[in-house]
Image 1 (cartoon, each protein chain N blue to C red):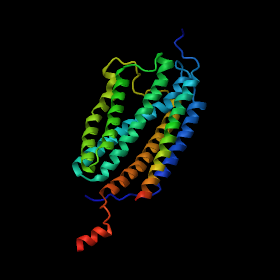
Image 2: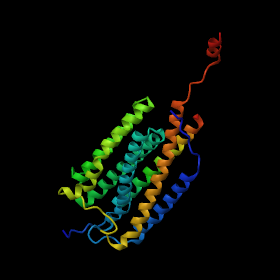
Image 3: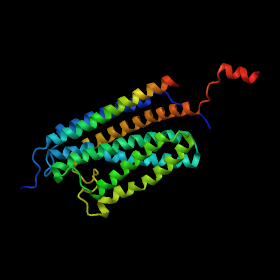
Image 4: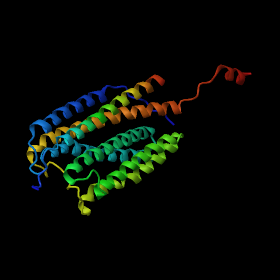
Length: 41
Length: 236
């Protein structure tokens, strides 16, 4: 045990992927909901 | 009550594009250019998304608190539409924060989750904001909805200074607050770029989401259309 974390790229990729996915999905949902609201107005 | 006007400017989309650009450049530097940290190795690169998310989540909570207080004092429904946007975006950021934190915790602490003061108080605020969103979904009267959710937001926001100070007040597994003054200068650029990236993205999301809330409010406050038969009946 050296106290140094070895590897771990899979965790880095997971964190960045979840963040990107959440932003993209939320952004698309916002644009869709805005268009629907504009059509109803 | 005044029917709120809805802006149709393209400003949120410009801010959104700026945010994406900052995040792309910041993440590239954070993943490919910045050196690995001495003890945590490459896992530390999660910091470049986790810390900006945390800073901006706190800003989203403060923004929601500001909107709640402004509505209660001024009674203007535009603050309620902004509150709805702030709470929803704040919930998204809190959820992301917990996911990123869990992913970072596994290789460094050996567990996905721990009932540590920082994590627990953050989770409390996440569930409080989810509760406010549920409350807004179920209350049909716009005025009652605005008042109740403003009061609930103020109560929930009491947790924010506790979240911030939790790593100082209690013996916490979570490290002290990360700021440019507490990390190596080699990590500054990606951290700052991603912080601005998330800030721009959050601002654009709040602007667009408050427009959606304003449209819904307009529909709720609009007079129901008078049917020809009813009109004729009244005249007769």
